[in-house]
Length: 130
Image (cartoon, rainbow, N blue to C red; front, side, top):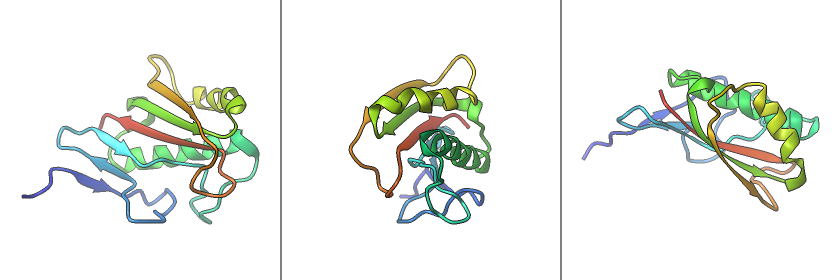
């Protein structure tokens, strides 16, 4: 039975470091993005500069994936934020708010003790419309 989902790979985002897609487009056009951290697309390393720099780079990675799928940041419906340390969430959200306007995506904030890449302080997972 053929799958109704389509993989999306963004040439301007960091390469996947495992067996996963940058995003999956469902048959109804909903886009499910992989979790994105502040990886530099050129080096694959987490950008320096703390949570603000990592948040901005993660948003740029998300934007690259959305654009590769024919979408944009203004079509993000939901976000999950995984963050270390929890007390820095306001710094991260302040950066996020520079890229989004009302109505804002629904949001879940989750404090964690570690992320998949050493030095990562924040990771975003989003769902968007095409």
